[in-house]
Image (cartoon, rainbow, N blue to C red):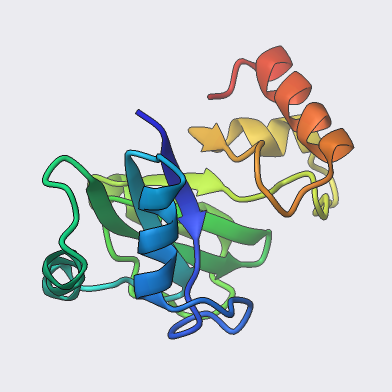
Amino acid sequence: MKIDIHSHTRRHSSCSIISASELISRTVEAGLDGLIITEHNFTWQAQVLEDLRSALHLPENFFLASGQEVDSDAGHILVYGCDINSGINRHWREVIRIAEEEGGIAVLAHPFRWKVRFEGMDYDDFLREFPAIEVRSANLSREIQTEGIITARRLKIP
C-alpha cells in the first residue's frame, strides 16, 4: 500500500494552503491507497473523517486516518494511533512515552532538515530513541532524503 503519512490542511495547520477535501481528492487522484492527516498539535475526530469520506464518495478500500504532528523540544514528532492532547513543546521523551502507553507510535519527523543537537547526546543515539524516523518528504531536498535513508539503514531504524 502507498499511504501519505504526513500531511496538513489549512484548517488546522498554518503551514498548509489546501483544504481537507482537496487534499484527500488529490491523494486519490495520485493513485495512493490512503492518507493520514497529521495536523500540528491537533487530531481529527473519526466522525469528521467519516463525514469527509461520505461527502467525497471515497472508495471503500481507501485508508483515511488522523495522526498528529506534535511540537517538542526536539522538533516535530509524528504520532499515530493515539491522541497526545498536545501541549506546545513537550519533552521529546514524554511524547514517545505517552504514545507507547496509549498504544500508538511516535516517529521523528524530518530529522535531517534541522538537526537538533543535545548537549552530551550523540545524534545517532538520539535517533535510536525513536521506533522510526521520517526520511522521505516532498519538502526535503534529495541530499537530505539520501542522508536520512543512509543513516536509518546504518542504525537499523525503520
